Each structure stands twice: as structure tokens, then as C-alpha cells.
Amino acid sequence: MNALITLVAATGHQNTTPARIPVRPLEPDDLPELASLHRRAYADHPGLHAGVPAWIVPSMNGGRGRTPEAASLVASGPEGQITAAIIITDRDGEAVIDELFTHPDHRRQGLAEELLRHCMHLLHTLGRTTVTVTVHENNPAAMALYLSRDFRRITDDDTDTDYD
Image (tube, rainbow, N blue to C red; front, side, top):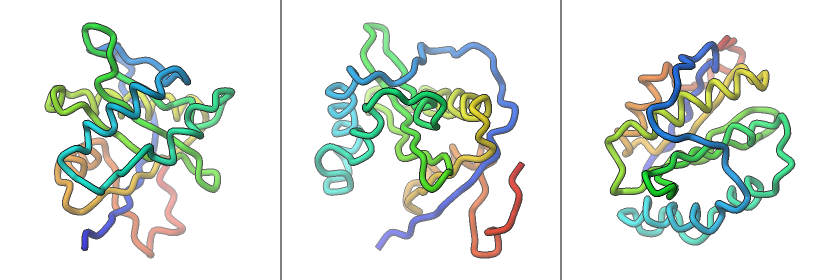
């Protein structure tokens, strides 16, 4: 059984240099392409994410306003196709990264790091001071990415910790 690890980071003042890749907000019309990308991204992990993930529908409802979902972003390839996505939702008033995934043909190009950087900046501008994510312990690439962006593991002792 794979353990899940929950990490948290302060959104803080992120580097706001222009993206090296085209990054834009997630749009409702992206649903079919996003669902297809998600299947491709997890094709090497059968059963991990079967079907259309539950987060897609709330993310596509529009009218997101100043909610954390407004920080959900996609990266586009040369022909405008979605190559990576970060999905943010609100859980009990907290911004949560539900998914951060990249098309297998576009991995190891810094897309996830770029999306994460821009997302954290947007969350900060929306007044969100922290963001959390849950990662499988057997996903060293995800752990390395989040730790490189100053995410810290949440433990029972951290319930009253201020991450600002």
C-alpha cells in the first residue's frame, strides 16, 4: 500500500517573471482535452485514476471569481494543445492542489514547475496564504518538485503552525 503525504507551502511572493511557456487559466471548453490528457498522463499507472476525475466537473463550472479554482492553469504546446495542467480546488476554506500532471511526451521540460509557480502567485493575489497537496510516497518526482518550492510535510504537530 502506498502512503499519502500531505505537504503545505506559503504562497508568498513568487517570482513573477514571464512564463517560458504559454500559460493560461483553465477554461470550461478545455474539459474534453483535459480529460484526454489526464488519461495519457496516468496511462502508466492503471487503476490510479480511472475515468473522468471528480475534480474536473467543479473546475469546469465557470463563475469561479476569486475562488482558488481561478488559479487552475494549463500550459500549451506549439500548436495550442494542452500539455500540462494544475487543478486547484477549495476544501474547507483551504486552497488544495488536486492534480498537477503533464503529457508524457512533454515531461522533464519544467512545465509542472512553471504551472506551480504561476499558480502560487495567483493564489497569493487571491488572498490565499497557503496551499496544500497530497502526494503518493512512491512519486519521487512530485515530492522533489514540491520540496523545491518550499513545501513542508504536515504532521499532527503542525495543526497550529502558521506557514506565512
